[in-house]
Length: 407
Image (cartoon, rainbow, N blue to C red; front, side, top):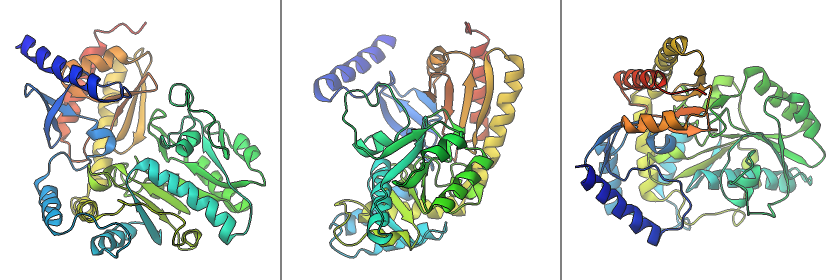
């Protein structure tokens, strides 16, 4: 069986190498199907999914209710472009705006596009409505905002992610995480906005401290700056509130969404106050595919399910369970686990050593998670995952840590 599996996998890997640009460091698995919180490879081996397509399939995989909505809408209307009024788009907008204090929404196709739209909106609002020449965006060290040229520049990380893409666009400043003095010092006459994630996912699952966020809000008010919150990964019940910024009691001028919005279909959104929305007008920003009938209908159903099944509350409860279980084994392995952190089911386990071998062994146990910043095991499972799956993960991690050498 091992040879059969190897032959199947080797064949698909070779096929890809001949067809696709080499941009991904793939996991050594080819997935053929998925259901709920389970993935299945070419030989029908079952894996527990603690990644959910990188916080995308928050309702789990291959749901019949979403497939029914998708099919029904696809038989009615798939695409007409944004030159026409579309009721599914408006129904989605009403539901989305009912979850927050924003007044308007613009639909896009991805998180990077949503963040790009947020940056454009902030700059255009400052120039066309405020009549100033402010254009600069301040971001935080280790942030991640996307891979377009602008969002890549906004991203507070160096290394391969930016290598070879210079010159990057002007108008972005990155400051150290948690350092208000540095943030204050970066504000100048050209500053338009401060852009933050409430929890830095790619940056190591780092929640922003409450006082730090309050200071940022005050700094924006004092200097007439806009506050942009990137909720691409943290939004839609992931952290235990519908939006992560609601934990902090703040109202961003602009915030973005994507990933879980249509549970696997490509969709993003820029949400903003009615005032800031004045920065856009016909012709200033657009998208061909954004907010089309199928993705809008599915996203509407996603919001319904999240609210009906109280998945924000479930994320809090399961996040607390994960915290308690990790603390239990941290006591057993104090030299190997530094601790855990996060909000809800955006959860990180910090190891005291490079976690590559641990990640590989979890994969061998058919448990899929993500390793970020070299030492952080990042868990972003479906919000519908079972408690027993969390306990299985922790018990397997406990066993692995008993075997690996932390040096």
